[in-house]
Amino acid sequence: MNRILVVEDEVSFSDPLSYLLSKEGYEVAVAETGPEALAGVDVCRALRTKSNVPVIMLTAKDSEIDKVVGLEIGADDYVTKPYSSRELLARIKAVLRRLAEPEELLPMTLEAGPVR
Image (tube, rainbow, N blue to C red):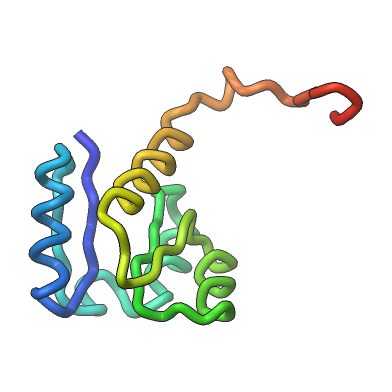
C-alpha cells in the first residue's frame, strides 16, 4: 500500500482530501503545520537531498513563477486549488507508475523514425 503525506493547515481541506485518498486505497498521514513536515518549499528541497520520494505540490499559489519554482526545487508535479479530484488521483497514479518502473527495463536510447 502506498503512503501519502498531506501537509495542510486547514482541516476543511485536509479532511476531504485524506478521505478521498483513503477511499482510493492509500495510507494517509496528515501534518497540520509546516514544522511537522519541515517548512514551506523547504520540504521538497530537503527531501530531494535524501530521497526520490514522489512529491506533488497541491497549493493555492497559481502564478507561473510559483509553479516553476516548485518544479525546479524537485516537485514531480504541481496542482493548483481548486482542483479536480479525478485529475489529482490520475496525477498521483502517474507519478507512482513512473516510480514503479524499474530502470533496468527502460531502454537507454529511444528511437521513433528519424528521432533518436
